[in-house]
Length: 114
Image (cartoon, rainbow, N blue to C red; front, side, top):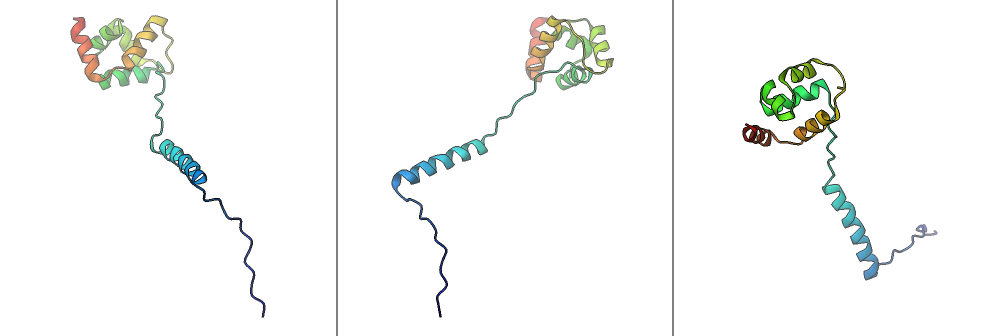
């Protein structure tokens, strides 16, 4: 009886260089998997976003208006609107800066401004 033949397999090099290269590659892959990059979406000025920001900071409309640099009725009108807001550039810039603040920073900024 004939013995079954084993398929030919190529042996991998096990030299020190080959092992370290493989180890480095796998270490890079693991490092990338462990720390996924979290991208924060840029602030999009919508009525819901303005209301959400104000509620997140736990401040009333007049305080939020002071923080952004607009009048209280403007804040109210913006919150009642729908969809993307058409804002002046300086208001958009101010809202974007306010969106980057934490609630504590927003309250501190309000206290400093008066």
